[in-house]
Image (tube, rainbow, N blue to C red; front, side, top):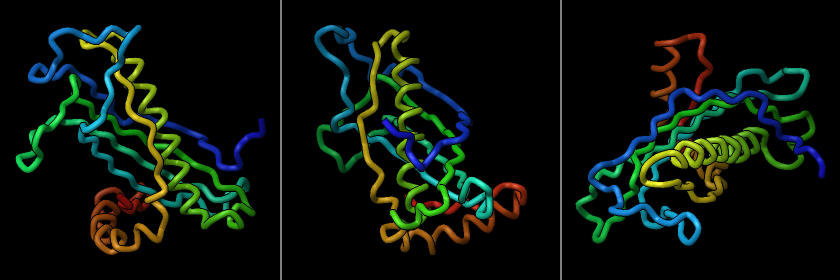
Length: 184
């Protein structure tokens, strides 16, 4: 085992909301020894942001990554046979990701921070949901395993233009906060 060159240095939960959805609770929770709730077909929304906070740090380039995961169970009129979660979930988390000098040989540093940072934050959210729901009446649930390769800059160039105005407004409201662009 070797440590990854990409390191999550800090992790901060901004808010954690996991609650029973009385409209969609299962009549009987699944037996944890024989079955588990899966999120197949359930709409999970994500919001991701990234901003460089220190390009000249002694450890390399530092990025602030943000991830918000939402399962709101809202009905979508155009979706036939929509599935729902027994829980409503809304969790937001920030993380500081270090990309060491020389890592640009692997990929652009912002791509490394985005793809790996989002994965690291997702893992923390996934663990938080599992831990909290283990003591809730509808039984434990685990968010699916995912990847974030679509956050690479090539995939996000279109979103960058639309996010520019939003980032300027956020900076005007809070000038000490690093500029974040919405990638997805």
